[in-house]
Image 1 (cartoon, protein in one colour):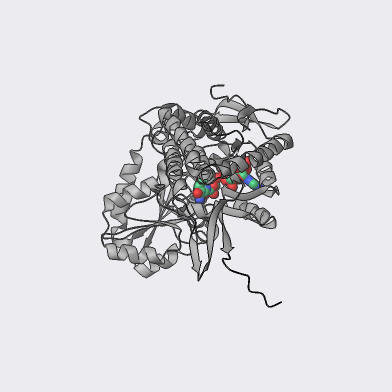
Image 2 (tube, rainbow, N blue to C red):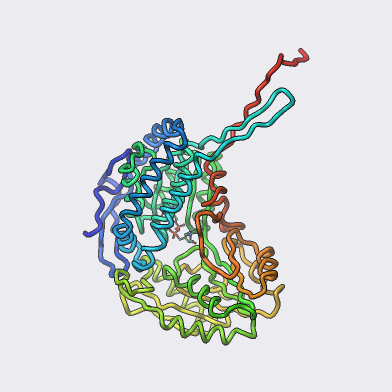
Length: 483
Ligand code: NDP
């Protein structure tokens, strides 16, 4: 098995195995070949991971921030040195084309580690003058944080959670999706090579039950989940019972609004990136593309031609632009949504069938004349299926774009920047783009409103979600007391 790690878990600085846990196979989605066999974490593994993290965190928090930074920076250098090997591992784990994993996944993770390593020594509290007396604040870590990941960007998700957590003095126990468990394990071993003390970043494998055990443990101060809205509701509820902090990065059905005055080629490119990159398995995708009526047919003609030229194939081939879906379950789900869209009367512009490059491929698919009540306009597909809707007025586009329980992302394409800002200002979404789409640099906050989640990842904003403020009042004179 060509990607078998030395153990299913990485706990307290070392690979670890407990074959009493249920076994599961990891496949390369490009072919369906089994590349590793791992085991769910048993209660003993979970206990070792949480208690080890708790012990390690106390000493880690006591270090000078710049000492923590130095270790994280060494991890960044190791990740960059091994870029090709890590890209290959990510492609085997997820099935995403190697041309994507070379530029998007680990590189974005390394950026996050570098950003928060640089930020940590600059974080300070404040002093508050109180007329002789004064108060000051200390920004403290939360303690042991749990990270739970989805399968679409497994290594990036692990880094995006680990970076702000570790740099600010927390420990993390991370559970990847069992569909893509390999990248987080590699990250844990790289941290140890970089000199990080054992136990600060422990990885345990398993299905939802393992995630639930972590999220409900009384020693855990925070849970950060990337996953679907139903899972988010469950985990948020469990965390609330223990009064834990949460960050929820959940699903979406984001609008991408294209006005008639937009640069149409750029808008078509954005719609394709926002529906077909990673075979459409991206939470912030602009899966409801609203196109102003006068340019609708021109937009669709360009979109069809460019979509039909996409090169699908072996993810390990450098020429491949489009790979398979991650699993048979996801393939079946996406094919079901395509069938429903056809049955509900959406117009198939291109695609609409399984791909012939391997068992898990779906053709890049575009439906036009989609209406707001169709399933395709309401539910997250998480596959390469674009819904094109048309509109007549700005106010109509805004109202319909907001007509969903989701609120992750939104985009506007227009030649009129004043309109771009005006429209974005009225859209209910946490992460927005004007004349761009799906760019998520670490300097910019990433997160959602409404049912798509709460809290923010990346940027200085993430620091708020991994630290808490202690306020200290200092009396400088005799105490005034009426008794
Ligand atoms: P799921 O919600 O099915 O799972 C997410 C993670 O939670 C998995 O590791 C899962 O384990 C775990 N889990 C499931 N049940 C529980 C539980 N009761 N307690 C604790 N953990 C649990 O999502 P997918 O993995 O299918 O990922 C796709 C979803 O993720 C989409 O909805 C997508 O939009 C969203 N997503 C959001 C992003 C964002 O940043 N907003 C980014 C990427 C994806 P297991 O897999 O074993 O069930």
